Length: 587
Image (cartoon, rainbow, N blue to C red; front, side, top):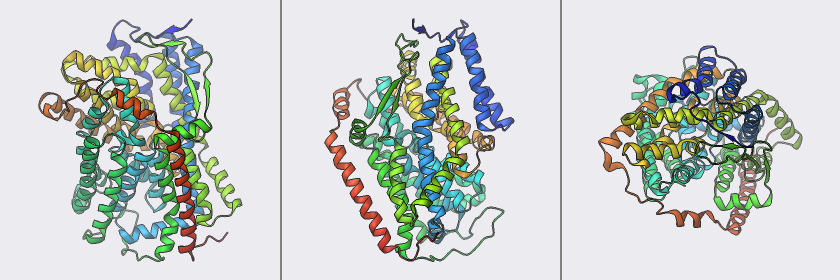
């Protein structure tokens, strides 16, 4: 017999929420105060959550254990798969000395650490978020920053901080699509509303990154670069989200920003070059390689961009899923939990072997082997070294996702959501923190929209404000929780060789996360009660037919895109080998 979830087991929502929050309080304490290693902190949180789920929420032991196991599997695939393949691609570049050419090419643009952080973490990271999401930009950006000489803690922290503004439209707009489906609000209206919140923060984030790195005074020295980067991203993000929809804001905004920032930096330079305290200020580097050699060094990351962009197209996903996708119902858990609205919760593990974002990165890495000049034995050796270096990070990610699924299936996450929803007039402020909490627990803006989207919509109607605002704020506030999500932190530490130092990164990002979420909540309050004209006018279900039609993407179109992707990639490999002579890897 199925188990009925009770989201208020103590009869008082405030008291129930306080008990449900104990595992989260433990995580905060373990990471920020005790600086525990990530896997030990996560194990402690899971143990406490299991006890509360069984004793307070009366969840059967087998369901509690199975839901944790289900989340652990999701942590292994697809999340850890992204980390493994992304770091493998990076390690190939390092092992074959091609990354030395990349470092020189970046230093030739600017030897200022502030500018390099903007170019890599904010500009390039936003492209990766838009194309793939789910940890890819943090893994690649953090690894690249550490590779060019950033302190690993700063490399991780800056990559996490930069990965905020693009998150809501990440992975070709999946968080917005899920938010609209779950809540019932209009997809285009939700895209517009998020596009009228995040651009304010897109302008702010480059300044914020620079201040965190160098302080106010040093940041003001490069305000033109920061304004160009943030401004070009914000304007494009607003225009695309409001006039084209939720699928391309990150892709187009990042391309525009990369071009604008790179061109501007070639024209304008800060009076004084800033580096970290442990570094000596050196002259701006001269490009030591031919343009062909630089192109060859960057080719693996160009291939990465091509593949993750292709994999983000819905028709490609459909085509790949038809070829090879395995689904395994979690026996004993699937439809054995009845949620708080009376609907059985499915528990089917999907092993999307070909359509996973990590697989697209693997194809890029395989094609990069001849590009970087590595032998098969070298490629295999690097793969083994990569897996060995990531073993603790993979374990941490799996445990964290197990914790998130247990919070979801037990009803504890909904209890916390209902407590936020009881704040009445102040709900738009707490709406942002509800999204923040969801991303902290799950590591995903998509997941927090799935978890709390309907709750946001219902509560908004009860207090008399437009639900499109609160559902949008759930997503926009959620992006600020990305930088403190244990899952994201585990990805960053894995990429920079800091596994076991998750507590240090958590301490680095926590206050910034809270400040930015509070500012998002204030903006939502103003939009709810003062600047109501900023909320788009919409009619419920006006896009239902269009959305259903768009979901039926032609499989043949997916095959055509795949063929074009591989043909273009092979041509890129050939061209990079021809024009990049003189930079061969010697074993």
